[in-house]
Image (tube, rainbow, N blue to C red; front, side, top):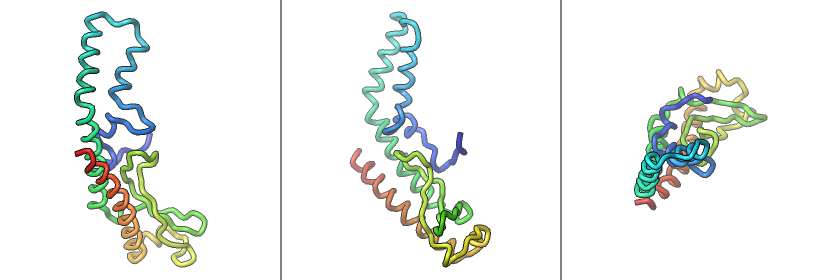
Length: 159
């Protein structure tokens, strides 16, 4: 299991699931299919639960959409060069930072900052280079803003 990041972990985003993840409330109900036939007493509670989910699903979904934007903006507004990780792949230097994206498997955002021919390949040296790290922060901010704008449009359409 990966490290939990306070900027990429929500409440309602987990409850409502996504394209690849079954909503937590559906997963909770599915447990019953693995058990013996419920009593009428238990069936009553299950039906009440299902009815409550149906009644509130839209509100919970909307809260999840708001959480998406909130988590993304928190990361953007608290972006610090000390949180940026660098990788060199072939001739490219990538910068990445944890970032919530609902329908992406990786919970980070990555950008190409430059090429090794210009900046070199020594990551500790790059991390100490203010000009390079400023460029990394700016490029990450631009990429985050693109994703945030999409999330804002989705959230706006929910209200």
